[in-house]
Length: 119
Image 1 (cartoon, rainbow, N blue to C red):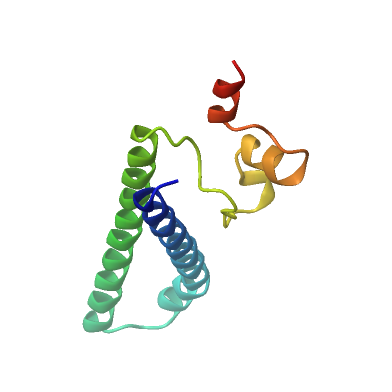
Image 2 (image 1 turned 90 degrees about the horizontal axis):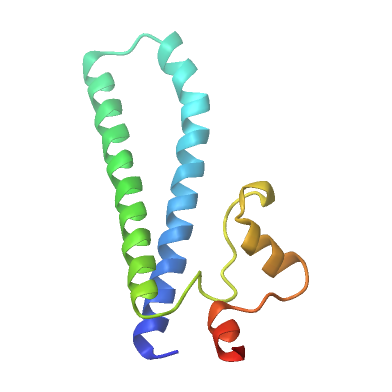
């Protein structure tokens, strides 16, 4: 692994965790905040501030997703398939990709590059 791939790995780790953390926070705030905002009378200024905060958060989540997609595409273009080693996906186990679950919960699965070398 060269220095550029390592840098992309660090970027991917940071962005995926920021994305997961922000998503979790937004869901928690939405579950609590939506009923409160509906039940409590709010001024127009408060509604405007809330709408701007929601839009900014949506743009941040979209940016995290775009950065993740670009970094994964660059890794694939360089011939590095899959996610970085030892990257723990911040997802519940049923939502993790099947290949990831096989790799991390059972016997080790060979990577594509190792399979190519065996041929």
